[in-house]
Length: 155
Image (cartoon, rainbow, N blue to C red; front, side):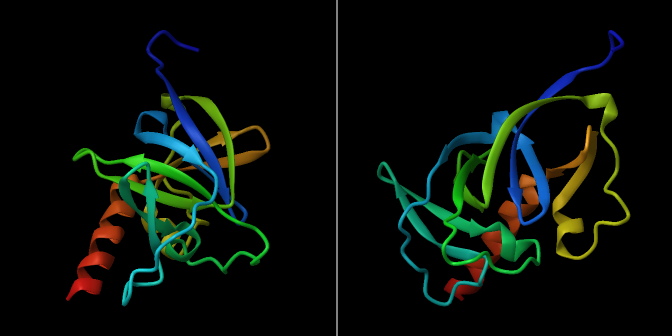
């Protein structure tokens, strides 16, 4: 590794057969499934609201956002709570949590041409890891979808 390379740490998780990651500095916490309050008239990506120690957090269905089929009803998702620059927390519902992975930033590549549909719009790029491709989720775009969805529900 050259002296110019920078290591980044990504919190990883899976959604269907996609291996995704977000920068660890954006992750507030990872928690098991929480009971949710449904938001009337909200789009399908907004699964509900959870109470996280007195803080109301919107739970977003990453499967729905990525255009993937629903998970089986016997498998409860995991909450990856992320924070945006305005200190707003949002929960991403994922299938399974992975490890924190160190990646070399100079190995970052553009979005693969084989990635299509809504997933292509929500991914910044990828890292080729031994045996699999790690897609970096664009948390800003995910949160934009969240804000548009809540605005539509309140209109």
